[in-house]
Image (cartoon, rainbow, N blue to C red; front, side, top):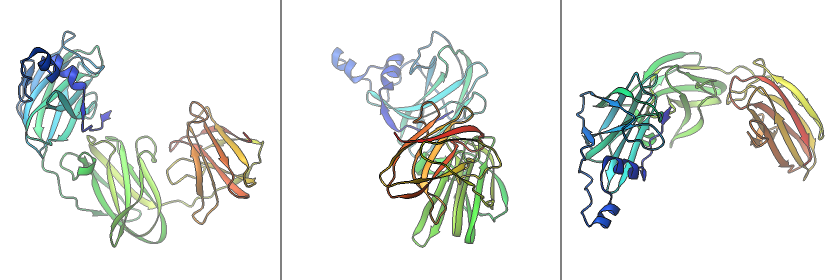
Length: 393
């Protein structure tokens, strides 16, 4: 699992500094000795050179920190603005690596990673924010892990300039995202690929991003005279860790395809197709009734991906209703709304308020009329039986 970069000061330094034998400012005040400057390196910290692999063995007698296993610390000199890649590999331990910068008695945690190196190896990419010594900590993810490992610190290749590839409706394109891809600097240097599509006449399109190497994330933006505005974004709407967005297109759009985490990399496939016509069957339900049904892969899909069923209820202004959706087959999700020009205007939704993975939503009817209830699994591709109940609280 990728740990998002955390650019913050943390008292995890207290454990790391003490474990390495570096006196804090408080220690210095109590003892009358000057505090160890940030550039001082205790004997426990091993030097490491860029591009040269270092090897070590984590043992049960090594210090531990932050609820994980034994660790070793290395120091290297970083240059502000330079992007680095840190890779830790081991056949004996589940590798966990993080990088930090000493700031007085505190440690600024610049990022960490668990499995982005493939298998249980770690691979972390980060951009140095300041010149000077930085700490690389190699650690066992599990508290009782021990064994041999290797660690390599190297400069990342220069990122490419983002050039949008044109994709047409009905086309599928493949590519690879890695350290040399363009980077989103405002998202911790997350690599991405950029596409452009033009479709007019209000065509309903489906954009799908699939990858076996990383957790896919999609963003669609409309190109306007003043720049770009986001239309939609999605993480897992394509099922599993794949992404999918369905939207009505009328103009020029950019598509940003990327991993969910900044350390994700690998091959991917991007497809744009006409979204299939959605035939929605609306079932009637009354206050005090319950309905049972089964979601299957033949049911209509929400734009976000999940299959759904739709119910209609006649309700009076000011009436309070409790909607409960239960299922033993999937994580349920409830939507409350009414018919609109776009098809459905959502007025409320709920995921887990019914206990465990069941949904419960209490609403007050704003005006008398007909309202819609949509029941679905939380995630795309899920199916199974459910029970919907409508009652007064």
